[in-house]
Length: 455
Ligand code: F0G
Image 1: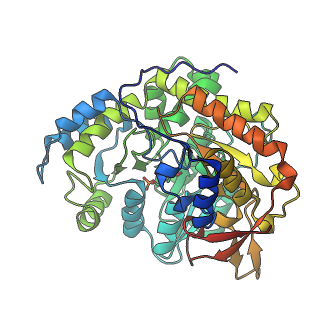
Image 2: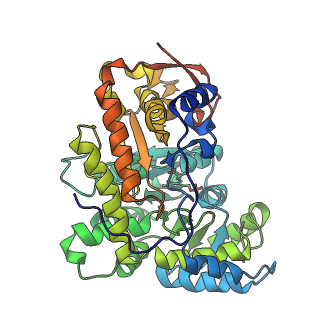
Image 3: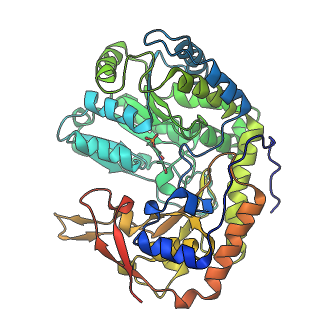
């Protein structure tokens, strides 16, 4: 597969340096084999997340100099409002410091104990924010019929209808869809599926919200894979997507191409009054949310750049290039490739390591030791939990490790290096051992848990 030509040239750089093999071994041992505990200067290629880690453009940096830091009614807010109104077309919006703050406000306003909130797959902060209000997040992803279907992020519409009938629409304060579906390989949701979910929610009078943080990648995939939309622009497709729902939570740190920022947008004026009340309490006055004026300006420019089609073509092809390179040397990767990351099935890569011994930690450790590469485990460490009703540990269906690509940051040589490093790990695959947990916190354990090798 050919590497896409970047539709930009590099103007500012940040030095990276690879620590020696013995230094990396010491660093990982001191980090108790949890790559979240490694200082970024000790990481060579950082694929931990695509959130807030991308490069801003010269236009964004110059917009930052225009930032108006007035407490109320800053001109930066009105520049952002113009762009948000243009692309997303909701009646009202409030900036927030990032996506999870928008989720927090939405749930605080709408969710009461015992409520259910269905989605294709909730992101972990969304899930945690729903639970924090006493609600029950419910994931209803469509079972994959074949890996040739590009829309692997869809919600199961039949299950959604049945679920609403079972628990009663009055117990569902809002329904959701995450686009693209970060919990399902970063794969897109089709426009038919979005429309289908919208019809079901609306016919049951349930407000419909989209978690829109990777909406531009989702719209680009719709354009590419659904021939009915090939002549439409990504912006036109996005408008159609948002016309299906009543509001969105947005993390600007993804397709807004900023290092910090987000917003919550809705159409309902009564709901917005409640949102503003909580926003003032938690984030700040509604014309700045949790952000400085310069952050609002950077996001206004980033949102426009994030829907440029040459950029999206490069972005999705770069991810596919890494995925294809890994597949070619025999790494078990999820296919088709999504927008922001490549997901590796670590249990299939280390078939001799039982899931109880965390093959995902084996892989994330191996990548750091062999190449200074940082990835993230999204398997049993992140998602396994003890189910009180079943009285047993429930594990996620796959022991995934995610390689997320920061936007406009790494080049072909960096990705080729990642593939070569995987090659080195594969050469001695049977020598790798599993891990055991020596300490873990009560919640979201993958961030801070500590491990020991089972050598
Ligand atoms: N929704 C989705 C689908 C996300 O992937 C994230 C963040 C959020 C909401 C929350 O946004 O970080 O701005 O508060 N995902 C990052 C990741 C952290 O690595 O996938 P935030």
